[in-house]
Image 1 (spheres, helix red, strand yellow):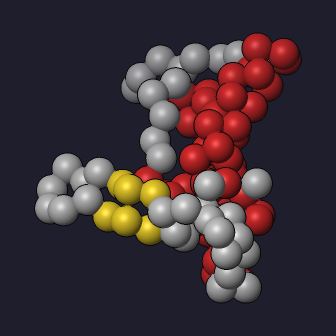
Image 2 (image 1 turned 120 degrees about the vertical axis):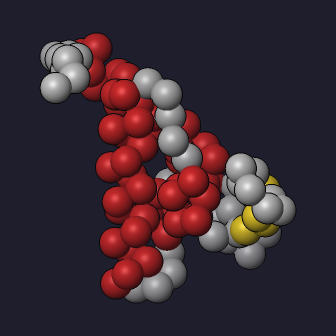
Length: 94
């Protein structure tokens, strides 16, 4: 079993918040009718161009475990919004 890294209090919150902000910054450019396209590099095939917030959110994987946990929480919000409403994923993320 792999060793677990345990963080408490301010350090944990700050690292998770950094992950939330990284994901939100990547997704917010797709917001609204004047939202811009995002190019997502795939390890195979052609790059993907999208304006969908949940698609951008799903493709982001951060190296730091705690930053990635923060990003995963926001990604879950975007996915649930997409499942229930079908739209508004960028707004829910930002």
